Length: 333
Ligand code: AMP
Ligand code: TRP
Image (cartoon, rainbow, N blue to C red; front, side, top):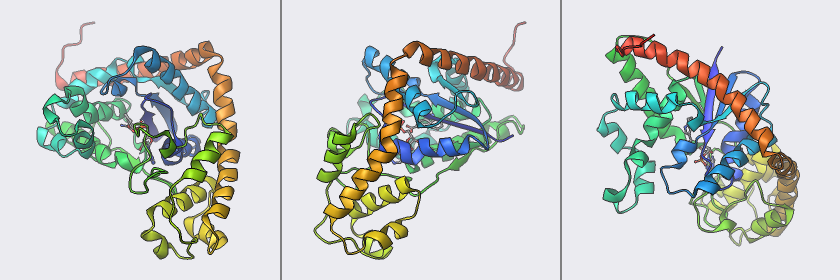
């Protein structure tokens, strides 16, 4: 059976981009695939984290997965650091990842900023750990937002390099699943920037923990332009903020951008934004409420993660054993 692996970092709250670009697709795919969903706490360490906040965000991301509709009975949900084989395989794969490949990663360049010399090794090696996350389970499909495409291509290249080096056909080539209308949700303050957890303005994003009032305020304040909504997709192209809001609407509604335009063409943003507020609150409200309910019982979340880590750990240990045999690492019995 085909197998899905995907993950999110427990850094700040999840936002609408995480939901529409990834989480919602996971929910839809869990029926067709054996599914493993991870909270990638080791990846979070590539930027400074407050220990208490990291801990609570880890449970909160687990709650968000479940609240959004991931079924913990059918899927494996766990936090990355609970399965040591991710870090072990990461080392092995790092020995098959040429620096030239890593130097091309645009996310590293963005996150390292101007002072590249001060950037830590973990930030640079981040995509190798991500490849290990996927390959330790021999996952065949990886549902993510558009921004992860380059990292997935690297995972495929590393899998190929390993297979060639040992003349085996061990790792599958994981297929990216970049699905739906909103694979790249943009900031509500600037339609040319990605909606991101790290944006300093909370008005740039809708968090999964925002209540109806916060959602309404953020959408009403969202940047737009003075023109009414157009009737064609071409006319949207040069209007990034309008395009983003229409895309969000279509994605939340489960329709397409053209259908949204058919409905709102010629109308003002104030009319359209009211409809968008209603739709957002209707779609996100139940998830937020369920997240709160789950967060009130952290022990239950931990039990779910424990079960997930046990299942994931069994498979990871089995695969790492096979890999050690391929590589020639002595396995003492
Ligand atoms: P992260 O928050 O970086 O851990 O991302 C978790 C998942 O959400 C990944 O699959 C990302 O590709 C996806 N994602 C993050 N930001 C956005 C966005 N603005 N639009 C669409 N998908 C996103
Ligand atoms: N790098 C991903 C992100 O920030 C998170 C991630 C880590 C991931 N490991 C993964 C996603 C493996 C998919 C598969 O969005």
